[in-house]
Image 1: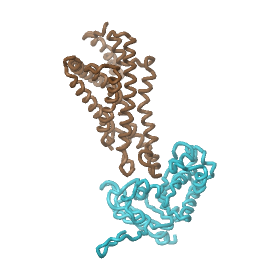
Image 2: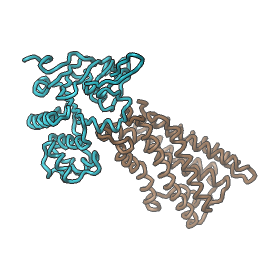
Image 3: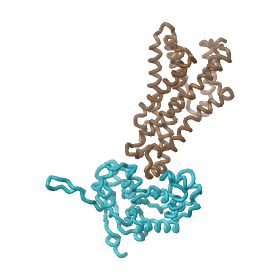
Image 4: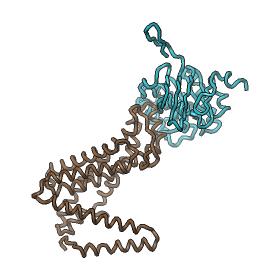
Length: 234
Length: 262
């Protein structure tokens, strides 16, 4: 955010983790986001929710520049993402996808894709943060169950030492138990000081997880605020 | 026989074409028209090429005309690669560079090491063989690259999301594409003489050349073709993959099939 006055421009801290200014994505006749104005608060766990096709995943992909806006501006802590080095940004703003995508090789090989210097000690520490035992380091990543693979992907995302974690419906392919584990891990990340942006279409999950909520509808912000404000007591 | 086929010999060779037409009619394959068109088109094209080659290989014809023909082959091959994978931006120019590099490397070895003399009768046929074969692999590389990146978009984006640059994020896919595109030529070279009796050798033997001499010519050509295929395929694949990522390391929107324009 910039304030102008007395012939000079000065920069002030923008508290928003991400802010979206009139952001549209996609061609005119098929917008996935359509003039979105919204801010995500600087800390805590923000749930982005809305019906299918409302632009939740697109919003998340904008945050680490896997997509760029057709119109409008996305800022991260006040800085226009267009001005950021995309590779540096992506290491700072990590992402866990809807379906776990493991690479060929062992779990340790996967961690080394994110951090080439990752040794077994560091690998064990990353797995522990993702709720997996160190014995998983040598396991073939292709043979993990859905829940294990998603946690290995979380560990891999943590290997870049990110300051923000984006999670795009990370439990949609998991059973109840694995979902519970991943939700607890996200909460732990937040407690350790890493803000999490979690996309879901499940109202129950939103109620369980959210500190803050952004509801999308047809590519625009419907409502946003703290979980109490938006969801009330129900 | 001494290589003289003649009009009657050519007509006799059409017997198998007639057989294929009969089979198509009996099995209702409806490819009769295609067969007839391909036979006539091949005949006309090769007669034109034969007539032109006769002029080109005449020792009195300036060798510049042969070089111009080579340029034509390079441009046509680039246009063909572009036509087969239109979703890759700038593929014509990538194909042009790949085929030109193939010609330069192929000629440098062929003529630099005196495998063949620099003459009209060697320039055009060698360029045709090198670029004709390597163009096929270039097409496979471009088509397969688009398909593989579309199919494995999730893996590529998972790598990009870790902060990997486009080159690293696409490396496993490019490796697979190169293996796929190169393997037919490698298998052809392995099967030389056992399954596959290549055209140049067969032609020379039919024309009455000593089989051992024919084999030596063919071996030299096969090794050159193998090298040419590698050069074209690698340049096409690396050139195309660069064009499929933006400057800020995002994978562009891709059609499922390389032949769609996306």
